[in-house]
Length: 452
Image 1: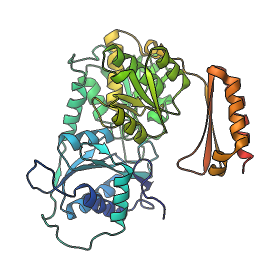
Image 2 (image 1 turned 135 degrees about the horizontal axis):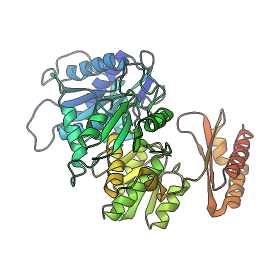
Image 3 (image 1 turned 135 degrees about the vertical axis):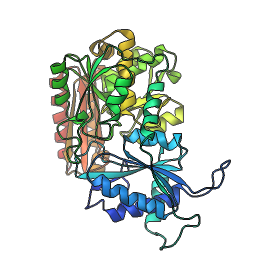
Image 4 (image 1 turned 90 degrees about the horizontal axis):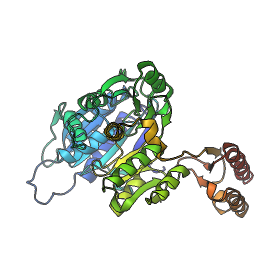
């Protein structure tokens, strides 16, 4: 059996790969690892955990299974209900919980679901902790009464408001920083369906909420950050100043300007980086991005004297690099952006609030803000069914990559990398000319296929 934890917790089709039994057992195993031992300076008590979920129908029975597993292990549970993933991370720390659990499959379709753990302080688990949970899962204890007694379960339905207060307090200079703005927010029929519009209204914006009627089955269905056409149409229909899109668990944010142009994660990072730099709050004038970030972002930051730290794809790599260097801003093109002064993980609501606040404070439309970088044409081809190790060691492929890089010079970029989740190799080419990017990407993809 392969590793149970993937790049973002344990995911699968609910009722098949992710069953109620597995959810309960994972909770028991997680409790044995994350709630072990005493915390110095704190009185002895039962360990505590916060549990949240997105609105998927399967989240109801999976939540019940997780709560049962935790309480049967002697963990007191604060049940947060439907709430964004970053809110669970924040409340894990704010409520002094030993750990947090989020039930969500993020931007995946409704049949999927997932279980994600946060350690004390709202931090994502390192690989070593996930490995410990998998080992504990393979050696679950027999039935019995926990030493400190069974955990108690409390509905904490008012705690999400604490999270909204935290978001708004991250902009301390104004009680209504978005006053005068008309904003459409697409909540993807997901976890932010209530909190995102509420936060924006409290910030002073006139808000049109779409994708805000979850029925358990419509999450991410033709809406949200994975389908921006719905948001673009709504912005035009309502004559809005801007549109904000979240995914199912609201750890991502993408935007649309007043004329319907998409503002992706790289452009948002550029806007935030310049604003933080101008305010003297960008640590070491450095931003953390992944290898997939657009060349235009790198060039804009370079020209502004802002350094770039590059990591592999995945937010855990971003977070590790940010924590290691004490950096305050990092993110991905997908809109998963980390503002470390205010959050321990990607937070779509926080990102959207800060992006809109910059526009409002400067009296500039999003279209003008986004001009801080030029987005280079980027062509991505996934070549499936190939030997990833052969691609990594092929001299012929390496020669082809060098040839493409020589042709592009400083006006483009080539990346050929094995997929971390499937038997495939991803070929990415950026260039000033889209036709050149397509031609070189097709040539390199053909070279990869020729290895099989």
